[in-house]
Amino acid sequence: MPQSARTWAQGSTWRELLLTIVGTTISIVLTFGTAGLLDRCQRSDDRKMSAMMVMSNIEQYSRNVDDMSRNIARCDSIGTWMLSLPQDSLDNIPPEEVADLINEMMALVKFMTHDKTAENIFSNNIETWKNMGNFQFIDNVGICFSKMNAEESNWNEWVNEYEATISRVIAEMQPGEHTLTKLLNDNVFRQKVESFHVRKYWLDYLSSYIRYLNSKNMVLIGIDEDEVMAFTDERSRDIVIDKKEPQQADFRTDLLTPDSLTTLRPLIQHIDSLIHNK
Image (cartoon, rainbow, N blue to C red):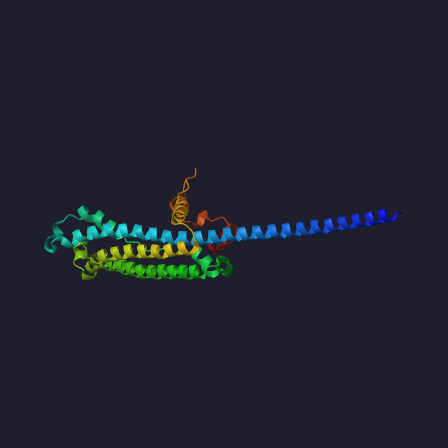
């Protein structure tokens, strides 16, 4: 083979080898680069979803507190009217005239609870912490949850005392006693009713303060408040389905009798025969 042909063939071989190496390198770079990009995108999506779940949970807590404040405002109105009644004329008020108001004032005072799913995931999953990448955000969320749980415990302790007071007064009633007279002549009950006003503005402060902390969360993580509100609205939206909600009463059945037992029938028959043949 002429020297020029061999040189050309060798050059062609090296070019093909070089192109192969370059192509392989580019393929590897694209593969791992794309995978890395996708991983970073996924981590970013996960980080945003975790943050949104946490901040939505905190906002929902504040909304629940707002609802409780409205209930206590109603109780405060009813209670203020009751406390203004002349005590020497309470027995003259027909019980049926105020029964609904008394029942409403009792029913509107409810325990404070919140969904702790997002809180537990956020607090107990170290991978979530690592992925969040903003320790100031993590610290501030922790402050929110700590405040929420402490105030919830404080509120529920007061509700327990309120319910225990009502239960005690009612349990001490004698036949013929007027419920309203009995309640309003009890100093502890009167103190609880008088505290409705304080409890109402305390609830207003609590929801405002929790939202203040949550606003810091939004700034720290870089998510707009409107987006958090919309996310919370969507989570709270009632889903309407073409099915009747199960009610406990629908599944209530008559108590079992010996004749209705079926699973132990052979044993029952055997024991019955022993008893009756005795």
